[in-house]
Image (cartoon, rainbow, N blue to C red; front, side, top):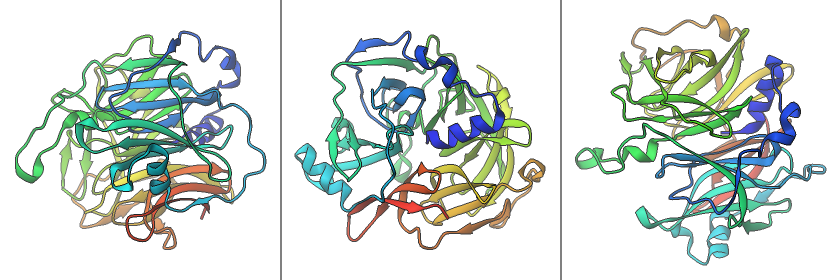
Length: 369
């Protein structure tokens, strides 16, 4: 989940304050080596501060990368076999590499990739940076300024369920995150009865309170749900209301007013679209083209969707069972096949991780549709 969309949203609402506090963003951070059990979702905040979700540790770590030299003219980028090149950098094979997320630094335009070296509970988290021209390097975190926020109500760390439905809910303690104003927005699961949770945590993590538990109506299933986590989200101004637009598995698109995200509260989202069942959303950005705002959503089985935000403030609240699709219109970008990770590179381009031939993954810049 990605800072370019966040910055655009801040400009829209007219209440952004990145420039006003630029000298103070690392105040309260300590210097040293942050500990990680895992590295999952990534997002950038101001001054090249990278937010890293440690899902197994049920924490968010903010790291001052120091990567603050503005990019020159953006050049097309394509790194074929990025998973193989990362494996070579780390001294292992491509089948022992998992790419968990990719995000673009909005200042330097360098890409940062959260990687697991190895499989299972003993996998080692590694942060990799890709510079202009496709040069790769492992990011040293031995001595950095950082701040760590631990979730007080994280789900249990252990396998639950039986057979093919076994899972470890701790792995979904954080499913996505973003920086907004002076807060870190987090989606995931908690240990509450209504386990689907959203959070708005003050930065730099002076205190971390319990999350806001959320309920949605899932049109494809024809029922209210409280245990399915948000898979990906973006902040977006719906009319005059600062909101969070969230995508869930199977694929409801839901609006939550940001003002409702209060510790310990229980809220109900507004389902503004059903985008098709048997599908898992993977990543989403918001961008502008031709004077209009669009959501771009990558999916596991339904391709990349360009979703219109026209008249979104008057969208119908879906409260009845839906056979397949309903709500905000979209088109599928047929040429964007195999996209797993997605971020905005500049106003005209996205950077994606997409599947190539065999088990190869490519890092590639694409013109925004």
